[in-house]
Structure formats: C-alpha cells, structure tokens
Image (cartoon, rainbow, N blue to C red):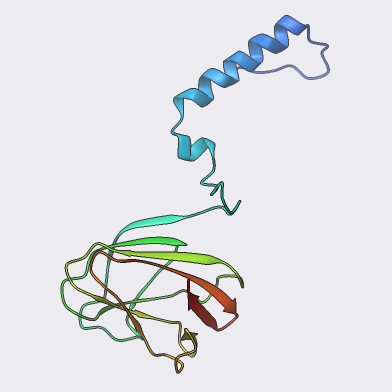
Length: 145
C-alpha cells in the first residue's frame, strides 16, 4: 500500500490520484466487507453464522448456542434436535434463525429465559424450511416477530 506523507500540502491532482487508488482497492473487495455487514434497513451491524448443527437428542442445557444475529441451521436430522438463543444480546436486538435441516428444530431460550411469554426454559419449534425472526423485549425474554 502506498505511504501518504504527513504535513504536506497536496494538489487537487494528488488528491484525485489517491482517491482513485483507494476506490480501485475498494472495488476489488467483496461488498459485505466494504459495507461492514450493515443492514441498511435497520442500521445494525449483522453477523452471520452458516452451517450450524442442531444438538442431536435435543435438550436445553447441551443445545448448540446461536452466536450471531443471523443463524442458518443446515443439519437438523431428528425432530427436536436443539439450538439455544444467546443470553448476551441487547434489548430490542433482532435475531433470525433459518432451519435448512430436514427435521423440525427445538429452539430454546437461554437458561431461565422465555420466548413469547411461555414458561421459562420452554422451547418453540422451528420447522424444516422455516425462517423465524425474534427480538429481545427485556433482558430475559424474546418475542417472535
């Protein structure tokens, strides 16, 4: 990468040349890197995890913890294999779960938390082929939106 000297007065042509150089670099980068994964509708930086395997045998304690706000489950072989929502998202933060596995998946809240005003620790089902969006409404509750 070029070094730009400090404390130098640049001519219009120098500045134009440097800007064109930077533009050329940015055009070669994938769009998701340039945009820093910003959702233009919400203005929120999104993280994406692909190729998630739901925990065989189900259950909340050993469920695969979802670590991004967009999560794609590719392996859910048996009905009620499980994944679990994270406990570290801020109130109002959205999360999306995409189940591209062959079976329905049990989606658990974090330990002691709830989804849609159900009793704490009760899962909801994410059907095969379904996309589910949730948002935190408090520090311990998620709502399906």
